[in-house]
Amino acid sequence: MYTLHVLRAGEEPRVETDLDRLPEFLDDPKTLIWLDLEEPLSDEDDVQRRLHEVLKFHPLAIEDTLQDYGHPKLDTYEDHYFVILHAIDFGSLKLLQEVSFTTVELDIFVGKRLMVTHHPADMRAVETLSKELRAPTKIPWTAPRLFHRLLDRLVDNFIPVMEEVGETLERLEDEVIQQPRAELLDRILNAKKTIFRLRRILNHQRTILDSIARGHHDLIPRKQLAFFRDVFDHFVFVVDQVESYRDQVQAIMDAYLSVTSNRMNETMKVLTVISTIMLPLTFIAGVYGMNFDHMPELHWSLGYPFAIGLMLVIACGMILFFRSRKLL
Image 1 (cartoon, rainbow, N blue to C red):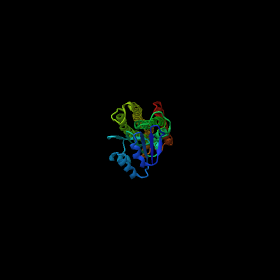
Image 2 (tube, rainbow, N blue to C red; image 1 turned 90 degrees about the vertical axis):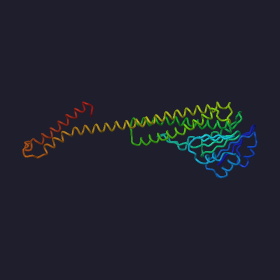
Image 3 (tube, rainbow, N blue to C red; image 1 turned 45 degrees about the horizontal axis):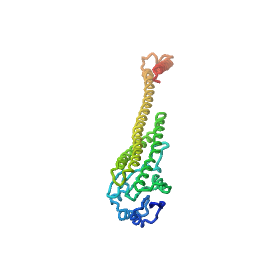
């Protein structure tokens, strides 16, 4: 599936359905185009041919676009650059009881008068930008402005998710302190895996956005760099949150292990006290169970009550002693 947005100075933005008109739009110096490619593509070979023969993109960049590259990257070419970024996959979001979500890849080509995007279906940042194109505006659209708006929406989508992650971790921490259960360990490990994976991706992404914001690439006019620096500042805030969540989830893991260890120690202490109480009782029972002939108590009519009473006195005395020491 594809959408071809055509933006011409002095005209309302429109959507074209005929990709054969791409050369016509490219030859018009007053026309800006945004070709949005959404998975699944109806004819991947045709798309690959047009990206190479019509738009003149590098074959390696096209290959990375049509395949899942895996991590962010930035490649610069003579008249365009190619960016791979990651966005939140809202379809995988599970933050009510656990921290579990994934990211999806967004491939972007940016030239002087064109932008091409490739992504899975229902990417929220792209949908938001498409709606903005239909809204009235006094500022003319340019490729750097389109690129900035897309990056801005992509970063803005991270912020509410990061806030929900923080709230989920706080609830998880409260559960660990109040009632550590075995199933909590799986949720903690899933949260740790999700946050560590997100941290690795976002650190790569921060480097790319920093390079763009510093004006290392001539395709972005210097007067527009302030907008990209603003996007980078927002993204640094997201990365800082992820770093704090990494420490928090490790602290939750340590707390879980500490609480469960303390509960195990309490259980072992009670069992040890019970064993200690039973030890003299077992000794008395063992002595009177030897059945030697010359044991006076064996022929004593009160021998049995005496042995039972002695056991009760010793057991009660030891229980009172342990309670006085707060061991029971």
